[in-house]
Amino acid sequence: MSDMTTQTYDVVVIGGGAAGLAGALSLARARRSVLVIDAGSPRNAPASHVHNYLGREGTPPSELVAIGRKEVAEYGAEVVEGDVTAAEQLPGAAGFRVLRKDGTAVTARRLLVTTGLVDELPPIPGLAERWGQDVLHCPYCHGWEVRDAAIGIVALTPMAVHQALLWRQWSADVTLFLHNGPEPSDEEYEQLAARNIAVVDGEVTGIEVGEDRLTGVRLAGGRVVPREAVVVQPRFTARSGVLDGLGLRATPMEMGGHTLGTYIAADPTGATEVPGVWVAGNVASLMDQVIGAAAAGLKAGAAINADLVADDTRRAVEARRAPFSAEAERQVCEKTLGSRRHGLQETR
Image (cartoon, rainbow, N blue to C red; front, side, top):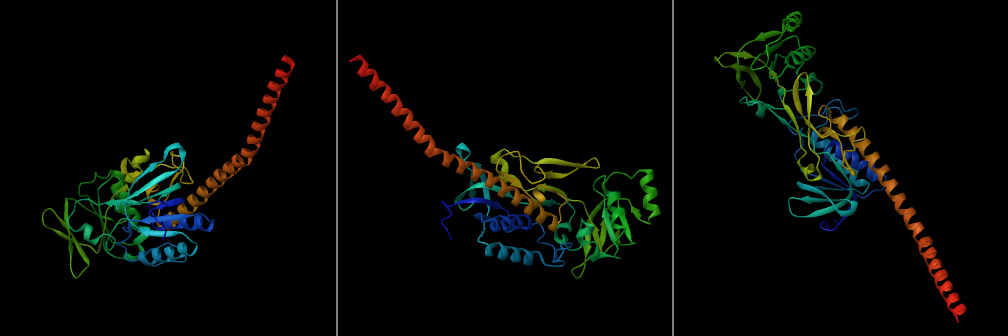
């Protein structure tokens, strides 16, 4: 591997999940020099399988990453593991310096940041340990796996009734635990009743687990309601600290009168307000599933290559003009010198 303290790449990709690897693949196939730096802590690590990824349905997340890394490497891109602590602009629009926790640094003409997000769970004992198994949030990711099961929705936000009605598509046994969420309106109570969704008042204090599976929801008074899966709405927080040094701050995302999380704003190609910096995947789009993140990475990679093509062309034009400029300057100097000599002869 090249000396990473001095190596310069066309593109450094920060984050090696579906978005980062898809972007790296498209750039490597465009014959760009690419380095992917991955911290090795993917959001979907607790999940056993990836779903809704056409052609890869049911693939374990770690296997999908391994396949992606192999494909990227086959086209000449480098993939390394490590934590990126900061990214900073070089003077004179010369690109970016990427600093790693181990003290090494690389430079890049362009950056693609695909660091994802963090799921911040409510402080209910037991949820974090079962996250991605039978404590869930997305029915499109995990609904099929708990179809016809006894599902509990823990109300945390104004979106709770919507969640309950949505999960009702996968099971006829859905219970909404009001917990500390807002009281449903009369219209919402009618909707819940029409869909045979039970409503339970009281604070949720924990979950019951037996034989490595969720068995119930525990309430403040000690009552346990049997359930086989629990749905919660985490707060989605963009992993965007690496962008702070570039002046890019996360933007709150509002939905249904509730702050769902934060993300880095970008145009449809992933270009941010800082020239030369793109984002893709969950750091920019909180609702993307794995296949959506991969598509966003591909789109960003193509946009970055187009930007580099324009920059390469500009530099080539400047280089082509340089000899003509030098020749023109020489001719002007000779003409000026000739005029001076002619003037001296007339004076004599």
